[in-house]
Structure formats: C-alpha cells, structure tokens
Length: 424
Length: 119
Ligand SMILES: Cc1cc2nc3c(=O)[nH]c(=O)nc-3n(C[C@H](O)[C@H](O)[C@H](O)COP(=O)(O)O)c2cc1C
Ligand code: FES
Ligand SMILES: [Fe+2]
Ligand SMILES: [Fe+2]
Image 1 (tube, rainbow over the protein chains, first blue to last red):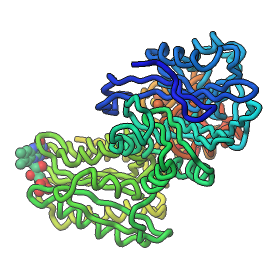
Image 2: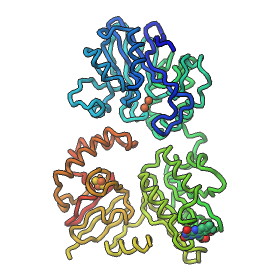
Image 3: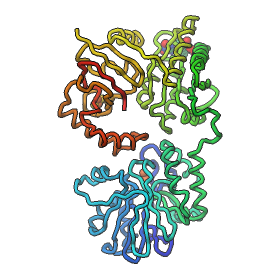
Image 4: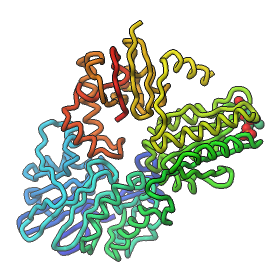
C-alpha cells in the first residue's frame, strides 16, 4: 500500500488513513471490509488548512501523507468537524508538530475539547454557521450541524471549489483504496447501514442540517469515512432527504395523537385485553389508536411506525417468567430511533407469577420513555370486570397522551401500598 | 405528623407526604418521568425542575451542587440527550441553574408544598 496523498482538486488532497482490518466499530457497527478515516489538506495562497485527523493507531499513515503535502510550519489552521477519537486521535501530535496552527471547532464543542485533550487552557476559536476563514485565495465556511451524531459536529465548505467536508455525515464504513465513489466497489449497503445506525436517531437534526447543505452548489462531498463522493454528489444529499423523510404522508391531523398498541398472545387473553385497551383509548377525543399483532410482523417493520408515534403500549403474556421474544425484539429496536419522552405502557395476561409487564415497563423507563400508568395484568382469562379495567387503562393512557387526564390527589401510604400490591 | 403536598405536573398527580420525604420515594410510583440511575446523589440523572416551592425543600449541599454542575456540563457535552438541548441550555443559562430551579430528586427532601416536573 502506497502512503501517498490523493488529489481531490488542484488545492485539496486526501491525507487520511485506511483501516481495512477493522471489523466492528464503536461496538455497535459491523464493518465487513474495514473503514477509512478521511482527513484533508487545503492549500491557499496564505497557508494550509488541515481538516480533521485520524484515529491514534493510524497516525503514521496520516503524518506520512501530510508531510508529502505540506511542511508543518505552513499549516495555518486545523479544523475539527467532529471530536470523536477516530478523527482526533492524531490531533495532540499534530498540535506538537505544528504549534502555530490555530484550532477551529464548533460552538458546541468547547467543553468537549477540554475533556478530550485533558487540558483546561486549550486555545481555539469556536465558529458557527456563516463564519469563514481565509487562506488567501481559498475560503472555508462553516455550517453548524450539531448532533450528527455528536453534539459537537459541524461541516466545512470550501467555497471556491464547492467541496463540502461533511464529517461523519454522508460517510460510511467502507475501505477501498480507490477512494472515489466512481472507482470503489459497491458501497451502497454501507451507506444505508451507516445512516440507519448512526444518523437515524437524530432525524430532526439531519433535517436541519440538510436545510443548510441543500442550497450550496456541491462538486464533491468529502466525508470522514468511506468513499469521497464526487460523482453525482447531490444524489447522496437527496438520499439523506429521503431517509429522513416520512415515507408515505401521514393521515393523522396535527391536533391528533397516535397510540400504537402492540400485542402477542398464545391463547387469546392478551388479545382481548389489547382490543379493550384500544376501545378505551379511542374514547378520548384526538387519539388515533392502532392495533398490531406482533406475530404478524417484525420489529424492523414496526420501528418505522414507532418513530412517528406519540405513544406505545406493548402487550405480552408471561411465559417462563419473562415477556416473549417478539416483545423484547420490538423494545430492543427502539435504540435505533429516538423514543425519549414518548408515552409508553405494558399489559398482559399471566398464569401465576406475571413478570412480563413490569419487566417491559422497566426497560422502557430505562429508555427514558414516559410511563405515567401502571400496566394492567390479568390472571388467565379476563372477566367482564377485568375487561372494564383494560378499557379504563386505555382511556387513561389516551388522556395522558392528550394531556387531559384529571388531576389526582393521593396519600403516600395509599400510593406505595397499591404499588406493592402490583409488584407482588 | 406534619404533611406536605408534592405535585408532579407532568402526570398531574399530587401526593400528600409526611414532611421530610424525598422526591425519589414517590416519583416512580406516580409514574412521573423523572429518571434515576445511581439513586445516591452521584450521577445527576435524576435532575428535575422546581416549578414552585423551592423554599420548602431541603438546603442544597456542596456535593449536590457539584453533581448538578457536572450533570449540566454533561448534558451540554454529552450526546445522550438528543432533543431540546438548545432550549435546555439556553434556559439553564438564563436562569442560573444551580440550586435555583434544578435539583436532584434522590437528594431533595420536601418540608412544605412543592410543584415539580422532569426536565
Ligand atoms: C410454556 C408456558 C410457560 C408459562 N410460564 C408462565 C410463567 O412463568 N409465569 C406466569 O405467570 N404465567 C406463565 N404461563 C401462563 C400464561 O402467561 C397464561 O396462560 C396467559 O393467560 C397466556 O396469555 P395469552 O392467552 O395472551 O397467551 C405460561 C404459559 C405457557 C404456555
Ligand atoms: S439518581 Fe444519581 S444523582 Fe440522583
Ligand atoms: Fe463519529
Ligand atoms: Fe467517525
């Protein structure tokens, strides 16, 4: 493998690192053919800018390429689009070798950089959308694009050449030394996978960022991982637009709220409960409730619905002291999206111990969902009274969803006693 | 025994409690969306907002103050809180957050009527 830099344009070179043997990234991502850490050097008439660095283990490749491009004393600025260690591992050494270079980071990276370098007196300039720095005949302009996928992230745009240094945005884990999207192997799966696992939980932030990016003329998108996108770069922006969009338009009105009721049942008791809960919720004006049997679908399908929903209830019988796998699969899939603050609850039929409901509730509480009600647990086949309890539960869930639940006053002793009863 | 009223505004529930009760003893039972992790004043996860009655709460200790500050920085820094961070940040800055409007639910005791909400 030659360690020479690669030209993107007359003034811009790739000085990153290839990591073909990496197989899993940040623990949660699989990387079947490794990844790259892309860093770039931009030469202007007044000096050189280094945009991002690489992870510490790959620093040698980075410095070798950088040295082929510029002398350390020519480096005027270091721009950090993202402080995660895979892009800042080589930073401390770069700062030692080019002590005159000024650091530029986003406004929301100011506290983080101190923690990263373990140094309180780091000198840096924080920049936001519209700020520019001049390298003489080349100008770098910043876009504040936080939470893609850390709070500190930003993009940098080279105006004269219409190159967008996008950080992790539009990146993917795919290692191919041919580097450019019109030369490398088929990386489409990696692009989609990266979006789904890294960017999707921040959908609203993706949409905000696209609003800044879409008006720019773009010749090349230069992300920090994977292929450099020079062939039809805007199609990748469009893909982010599509992925962050809603698919089919929603038929729910703005003043309505959606409640999804997922259930699964071996003998039909939990099914009966689910139907009554739906009926109860539907009694509350503005609630649009839907029922889904988890046996007839899988979590990959349901998670799209959950992403758009206001409230989620999950029904599972207790089998061998636990909720059943489809229920757990559904809850696990919530990590791929943002469920924080959504109303949640659980219910289910049981035979003697009935752990499922509390376990599901605890897990959803852990995901920072909002659980204002204790879920209904019914022993074996629901009686008429018990079905009425389900209806009431659905109604109360609906009222919480719409914010119209009646104020309640209760004594602490009563509250804790009822709670204890529920747990035993 | 002297009583106090704790109102959780997110679930619209008021609990009559004996004076000296900690918020943590009741917030989960009413289903309020205040979250816990360590339960002993170390992690700062149980940050909540005091809407009314801060004078009816136990005094803030040096340790609680430090955890609140660290948590505040972590929220601004960290990628865990994904939504509304700008609003939270602006609000906390505007309102000089330590000891005023935010407290830790696992530490704070109530001695009179208060209204609280998750952050
Ligand atoms: C294989 C098996 C294991 C079970 N394990 C438990 C258990 O550990 N605890 C419990 O409370 N009920 C247990 N049950 C009972 C079911 O929860 C009970 O029959 C319930 O009413 C089923 O609800 P469904 O009609 O919605 O399927 C078990 C049932 C089966 C078939
Ligand atoms: S739960 Fe950790 S500080 Fe309160
Ligand atoms: Fe990253
Ligand atoms: Fe990265």
